[in-house]
Image 1 (cartoon, rainbow, N blue to C red):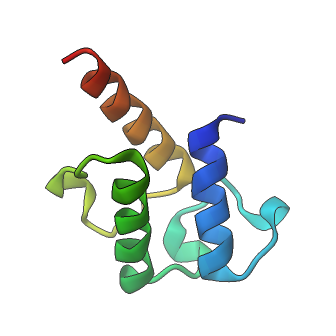
Image 2 (image 1 turned 135 degrees about the horizontal axis):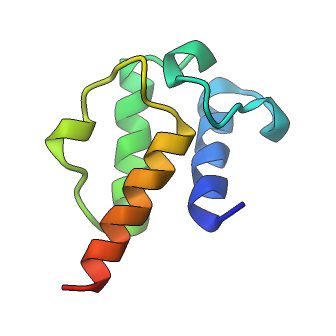
Length: 84
């Protein structure tokens, strides 16, 4: 497990008050009990940690967003930032 995934799971744990093992990386945030306000707080934490702004297209709170999809997004975003 990478650093990005560990960070996201840790943040989800705090929001949902669950243990590390209880966070299913592919389970949509909404099923983990994360609401739209929690999601915005998670986005803010990501932007502060990785020092970039998340694209508006990722700010739509939907049933598909999960730890795995955010790890993929953040990894790609950081990779693009490094190649600038």
